[in-house]
Amino acid sequence: MDKGVLHDALKGEVRRRFALETVSRDGAHDLGHVERVARHAVLLAAEEGADVTVCLAAAWLHDLVYLPKNHPDAASCGDRAAMEIPVVCGALGLEHHAKAIALAVSEHSFSAGRRPSSLEAAVLQDADRLDAIGAIGIARCFATSGSMGGALFHDEDPFAESGRPLDDKAFALDHFERKLLGLAAGMNTQAGRARAMVRQETMVRFLDHLRVELRSAPTRG
Image 1 (cartoon, one colour):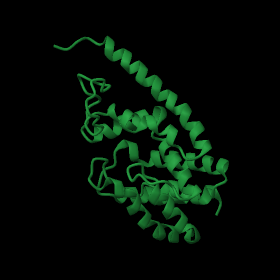
Image 2 (cartoon, rainbow, N blue to C red):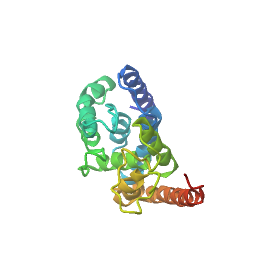
Image 3 (cartoon, helix red, strand yellow):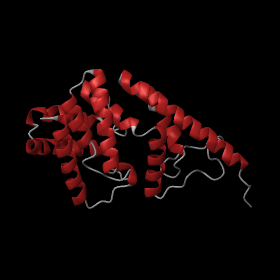
Image 4 (cartoon, rainbow, N blue to C red):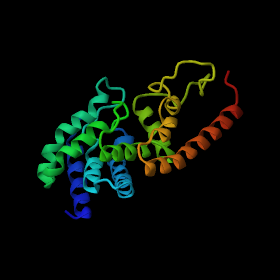
């Protein structure tokens, strides 16, 4: 199937399924996120010699099941989405790719903590994590925290300089140290790592500016 036709078919199927969901997605896990991951996946697949069809389909389908990040079963979303893959692939004529797509989807999640066992799974994992860093990653971080009722940062110790335990469910800024700043070094592919390092610098500059602004802010009380 032509990649443009497949892209449109996958987008239509994902949009249809999202519209039927009973749980409202946060702004960080919407259709725009999925489409950006698909774009990253196609580029990385081409550079790394991975199966572009598998990577494109896996990217579009990786967030087919959504639970809020503070849900106790949030780490199972990848496995739950993978269970839906055979049905979707059957409807789109991708039966021969279903197993590889499901594997990539089941292994992509950061919270599940799995190492990818195929090149296509590595590409999807990198593509998804690229959208978690850089300027878009900063925006997504605060959107996710807001959806959980979290604060921007700890009022008295924003950067946890006192040694307080990090809590990225309560404070969005804690998520940088808990996860985001380590993603670039953990990329699986050379192409993913090169892109991630550029985005990493964007986050570091943001944190530097934030530190300056917070230190110059009027003292409360």
